[in-house]
Structures are given as structure tokens and as C-alpha cells.
Length: 153
Image (cartoon, rainbow, N blue to C red; front, side, top):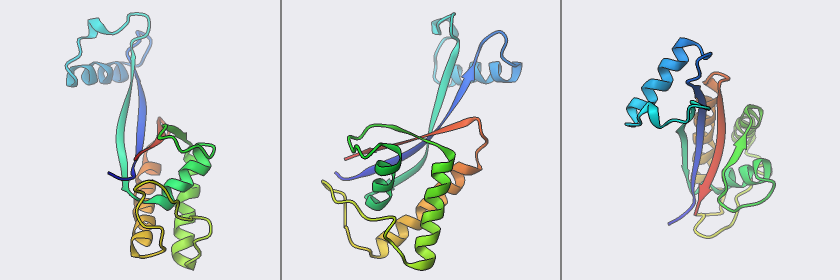
């Protein structure tokens, strides 16, 4: 038990007649990969969203607190939330700045049920470095991907 945190990337893939051939082929390939018959897909809206976990943290409560405050309106109810690219860039910049200056006031740990330590310790700094890696990979994806954050505890 504890705070598990996920960043997902999602991409829309259309199978419409007017969709470019390459995207329609991707649509068919995804359906095939998940053993879904194309005949099951509604004729009026042949499309799907592919979601991929691209980031995972465990008990990185300062990072969780940042997402709660900046993408979830302060509500911490294990709900998924949309994360804009500029928000990810801001988080990355805050992590880089905190590591460089040892200033932690903008990335404060959050107390919660099984959220791990609230100390500014080696785990805290490791979480910031891991966040920089995760967010850098996310931002390297092209603009056709959207992002979502979700935590469970």
C-alpha cells in the first residue's frame, strides 16, 4: 500500500474513411493487437485513444503535491487530470532549480495516508531527478500526444 503515481501519454487514432491511410492502418493494427474485431467498432465513430504509462513514481509526495495543486485544483481524490505540456515543462524547471539551489519551498512534501517520508532527504532528491527524466521523455514526444496524471493510495 502507498502512494502510486502515473503519467500517461495518450494519442487519438482514427479509422474514418477520410483519415490518412497511415493512420487508418495504425487503427487496424491496434485493434488487431488487442484482439478486437473491426466490426465491433461503432460505424459512426471509428476511432480509439491509446494510453501508455510513460512515468511511474512511488511515494514521491512532493511531486504528487505539485500535480494536486497545479492540475487538480487542490482536490486529491485519486482522479485523473489533464496535464498540459507547459505544466510539465514548469515541473521540470522547478525540479532542476530545486536541485541546483537546494531550495525546496516550491516542491513541498505532502502528508497523507501511506505517502512515505515527509523529510527533505536522499529520497526527495532522487524523486526530483526521476521527475526530470520522466518529464524530459514526455516532452520529447510529438504534439499529437496528450498527458494525464493519476495517483492511487
